[in-house]
Image (cartoon, rainbow, N blue to C red; front, side, top):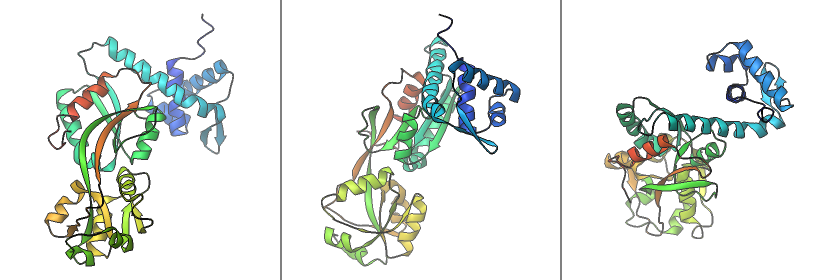
Length: 303
């Protein structure tokens, strides 16, 4: 039996940290250990596995083939070990760390309030937010970098579990000087002739918009793509462009008269925000606690 286990959790932690920092010294600092101890742990892991895991490129360490193979599996082992410790700490005690990925809209309008409430009710629970678009959040879950994600729209990946949180609405907006701003209704032909500035490919907002025009508008003129919503709002308010953005993101600009929400009855751009996590992950009380708190947020339009 003693020959079955050729690595320790400490060695895996050092390996994962070096993979993320590309440096033994940086990993040692992050793990609060000496550089020699971190180097020894890596050497012991490579000796036990019988394979080198890194290649040196100048002063940086890069994962080789075996390192890339091991990294997600090591993260999964470390995550499961954390869940074991949480379980034995007592079912009523919510403590530990939870890494949550969220899209830009969700982070801007919901995430800070959820974290603030959790900080108050569960001071031993530490949330590490990662703000990215939907595509990157899903990749983070599959790579074990995230334990929970909140995305815009549904996920079709069979490896991902999802739970609907709340509903949201996208709108097509124009500046007040745009020729279409005065139209009572804007049809598909007019939309196809317009110049657009949009969120980047891979964002939930862009995916919903693409789905709404699919089969209705063959091609649109995408002038610019940005991941920063305020930049899009400024471009639309000051230029001859249209954009499709979450109502929550442009509501203030609409009320101020800077943007006009166009009436586009041919496009259905309702969407849902969804919690997502790996199906093969074990029960996680921290994840459940976060979801429960989010469901009580007053800004969420519950389905």
